Each structure stands twice: as structure tokens, then as C-alpha cells.
Length: 311
Image 1 (tube, one colour):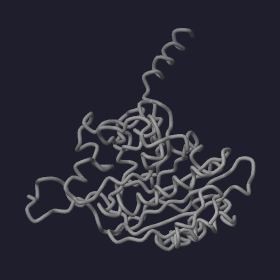
Image 2: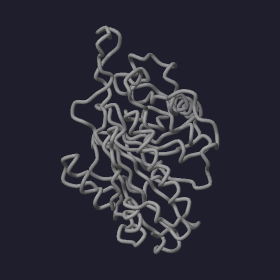
Image 3: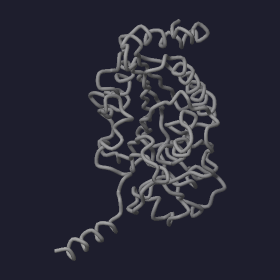
């Protein structure tokens, strides 16, 4: 019996730990408001509890192997982090488990056969010389230390236009950071950033001077829209809680539109052509005064008072 027990123990010890691509988000549910993932998104998406160098879970992503982009990433915001906390990764990671490899965390692409990896996900070459950035859904500037490095994975990235990403989208990421940093202590900010995949727009495109055999073309879907929903829940005083969302066309001249969470749900339901999207289970205090103030902020951002959190 002892020998049999030791044999079973040793056998189990050799079994790979599939801790990243998961059947459900239970082990990383802390990144979702009330532990509940958004409803109405791609039901065929692969669920990933994003890990970095076996350092635990840093955020969650729902990934489409068909479009080779994330449907969304869900994360929290630590107001004590600065943009300079920790070093960002020197390269972009991939998720080996999506392509059938065993690994405990995201890995450098160079460690694997690229042809084997690319069947289920994007690779770095897909973005080269396309005019599109690797736009992070969970932005590295919202995280610190290893959490910041963990955002540099292609399972957290989508093709964003070279003007849309560093200008329009980054502007609103900065505005959200300012809003959340101005809130009183004792709250948790839950964020979900997602995409609306286009029907037939994919990169890379074969250019006039590209040979047909240079690389594979039309692989990674370019999203038509990118959106974020923010839920701030104060743990003591619900009157300090609020939510809002914003969405923009992935185009150079885009305007970012700020909405209540129910309004964003309705727009996404139309864009996804499904009956109902529910980002936060109860829309996260969308009726609060602060929600109204932040939606008004779009029209006149200079009127926002970061000391009071009101317009």
C-alpha cells in the first residue's frame, strides 16, 4: 500500500499544472465585481487567469482563439502604484496553453515553435509593419511590479490604431486614474476593458511589395470599438460608490463617449448583436450622483473637482 501511494504521488507530481487556461474564473474571481464575470460575451472564449513567473494571478482575460484577440480583460486598480513601479517586460509574452503546451504562466514566444503557437493565438510578427499598436486592455500603467510586467502579453493585447491608442484611448486611461486616485480610502475599483471584433478586418495585410510567402496574412482581428467599464465600490459607505463606462471607435479621429453602465450594456448588445450584455451583475451603483457627474465630465472636463469627486 505504501509503495502504491508513493507511486501515485510521484505520478501526480509529474502532471503539468494547468493553472492559466481554466474552465471557470473561480481562482481569479477577485478581479470581478462581486466575483461575477460579465455575461453575454463570447461563450466560446478561453478563460485565462493571467500569471507571471508563477507569481499568482494578476488579472483575468477572456480570449477568442478565432479572432486571436481578447474579448476582455478584468482587473483592479491599486492607487498606490505609480507608472514607474517595477520594470516593464522587454518583450511580449504568449500563452502556451492555448496552443496545447504545458506551462504554469505566460512565456516568451521564443521558447516555442512559432508555427505551433500561432494556430490559436497572435504572435509578435502579426503586428510588425502594420501601423497598429499592441494595445493593452489591462494597461501597464494601472499596475505595479510583477503585475505591470504581466500586462505585456498578446493575450491582453489587440490591434489599436497608432493614433487612437496613444492619443484618444491613453487620454481617457489617464482621466480614469485621476478619478480613482481622488477617491477616499476603503474602496475597490473593478475594471473591465473589452473589444468589439470587426467582421473581416484582420492584420497583417499583404502590402504592394510583400511576397505572398513572406508571412501569413489576415490573422488577427482588428476591433471596431474598444470599451471600458469602471465599478468603484466603497466598502463602508455605499454613497461613495459609483460606476461608469466609455467606448470609442478604433479610428484616428475617434471621440471617446462616456456612458452609464446600463447605457454601455445596451450599446454592446447592439454591437455584438445579442439579446443582453451585463458587464456588472447589478450595474454597480449606476444610479449614484457620482455616476451622473462623471458622465457629464465628458462635455466639460475642466469642471471636475478631484477633491470632492463632483462637477
